[in-house]
Length: 500
Ligand code: BES
Ligand code: ZN
Ligand code: ZN
Image (tube, rainbow, N blue to C red; front, side, top):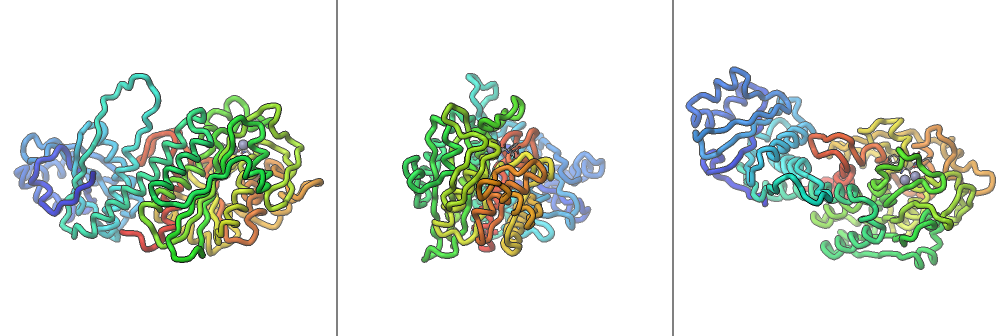
């Protein structure tokens, strides 16, 4: 769907062209010179009167009225060159991409060289522009009997550039791969739980394995019982839907050493169990498998880019529902690593399923671990809706994750994790651990609990309860699932060798 061309962008017939404008008079007018000639100098006039502006994120649509073979131009303000970062570029292009939807075009082109500025290389610009477009144009189809929107699908995107096609082509593809991983994760999260059961998550993982050649292990209830995953099983106990422990392995190195473990909370619906959620708090709990979706999205990116890195993904998939068989507050359960847990709150189920999942990831050779989970409402109270909370036992590994997140613009922020926090999760009078030591600092308690199973393996916990979904639309997507952490996890696995 993306084509790269070294031809003059303004000379062929096109429905619409995206042009970046820097707020820097010489560059601005120099970039527009060729176009200005086609408009007999009238473009400069529009710039002078402020009708076309390079103000950051300002979108201007200009119809050529037959003056050029290109029918319409979308100008997107990029602001000052020295302030332009990859993140700012991504958002600006996202905003402009949304305009394309309103214009209902079937194809468009990008004047790529107008987006190469400051520290942003040609490859990085190509990656960023295609990633931003791919993410921003996402829509969840929904289930209405009759859609009132006419279907307009953009099937051709031409990227015009004077740069070498051989370096631009893979960078554009990488951006599309990252954006597509995000979009597929969003669709998983937006899908209601009656249509996305644990078995559907398992089938989805199997499809990924088939497409990208991953080794796959799908543990069913009997095997989970045999392995003694008592914490995971307790959460599933009240359900008619069978649980699955999903394992995907990507081997990018000759030997299975130096393995990155990605663990994602896969609660397909969280009622809270007998510690039942109130009627307002329960709505939206189809998204409690957001961590699993992030891991699956990242695996898709990894499967396509094929980095020289070993990765094991582990997803405990179950719902958390009530029946006469369901687990109850006060129950004491035994996890796979032998530690016993006093259940004080059945709504603190994420840490239970993740406890056995991180143990299992270590059994599969993970040398470092990242778990991703919609774990606590507490992280929203602590950091708001736009920051993912992090907990780590290893500063060096945290810096690696932080660097990956800086590159993707997915903000993470560390929460303190001290000896006192460890003491609190070990405060049960009758078991080794308790799953809910009180509401104070409970985002930290959630992470600290998982830490008891990670032990000494370098680990970062990412609580995405606030960031996995969004009530409003952003420049990079609609309201609903965000697909947060897909790109950060993929970037972490792929590292410096990524194209662009
Ligand atoms: N799935 C929820 C956390 C959540 C809350 C995700 C809001 C997305 C939006 C989790 O299982 C939960 O219920 N956590 C409890 C923990 C408490 C009982 C210690 C919470 O945060 O209240
Ligand atoms: Zn819960
Ligand atoms: Zn939950």
